[in-house]
Image 1 (cartoon, rainbow, N blue to C red):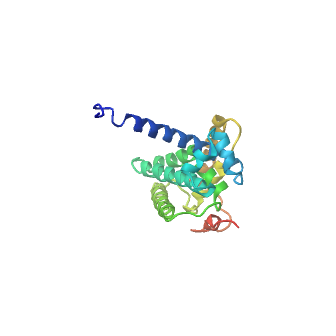
Image 2 (image 1 turned 90 degrees about the horizontal axis):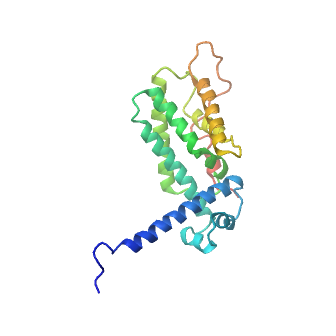
Image 3 (image 1 turned 180 degrees about the horizontal axis):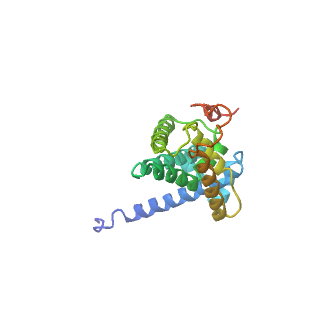
Length: 217
C-alpha cells in the first residue's frame, strides 16, 4: 500500500533527530571526561553520556577519532567566530569581540589538554591555516586602529587565549566571569601606551608551538 502523503520521511527524520541528540550528548561527555583526564578510557565517555559502548563505537571508531572530532569542532568554532567578526565595522570591537567569544566558547582548553593525543587530518590542517589567516586579518585591523602596542605580534593571541582557558572553577558561570576578567586585563596589556616598558624577551615565532600537535609516544 502506498505511503500516505507527508508521512514518508517522518520516522527517518525522528531517528536522525535522535541520532543527532545522542551524538551531542556523547561529545559533551567526551569534552568533560577528556578535559579532566586526557588519558581516560573511551568507556568513561559512554558511562558519562549514559549510552552503551556499542552506541559510541557506531559513531566513532575509537578514542582517537573522538578526540579528533572534539578538537576539529573547536577549530571550526574559532573559524566561525573569526568569520563573524569580519562584519564588525569597528576594528577594535571586531578584534576584542572575537577574543571574548572564543574565550566564552572555551576552544583553547581543548588545545591545551588534547594536543598531541591524535593525528590531525589534512582537513584540520586547512582549517588551521584558515584560522590563522582570519586571526591575522583581525590583528592587522586592530594594529591599524592604533590601539595595539607595537611590540605585540599575532602569535601572542594564542598565549592570551590559553591563559584564559587555564582558569577553571567548579561553577561554569563563575569560570566565564573570571576568564572575561582575565581577558580584560590582558587586552589592557596589549593596548598601546607610550610609557609602557618594552615586553621582555623575543616574541613567539610562527609555528613555535606546532611541536605539541605531534602524536605523543
